[in-house]
Length: 119
Image (tube, rainbow, N blue to C red; front, side):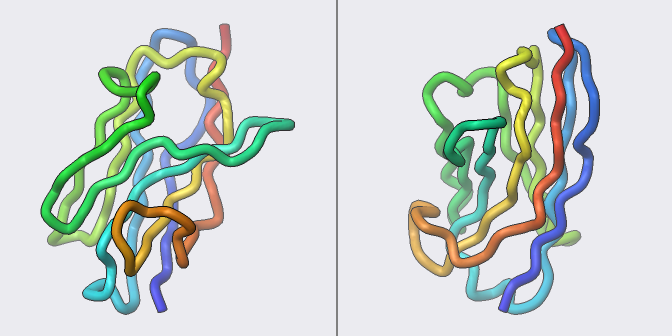
């Protein structure tokens, strides 16, 4: 089992920046891919970004250039740096992890952290 705990959400003005964190614990060695999804009110959960064991990163096309993934292996923590945020970035952001490649249908989810962007 893997446990994921997100932090860093909050209220930010449009154009500002925010960094989300995801601390992983448990059977970390089994993780092949980690990343983030988000769910805006009234919408389906959508892919944001992922990082593979070899540090390959992939982003949802419209977010690349504004969002950046990084991680601190010593702390077992994944980060999502959000820059130039827009009101449409408002959502609950979920950390996810998988024992399979590409983070499709992840087995593990965090509880989510709310990000609200004011205009």
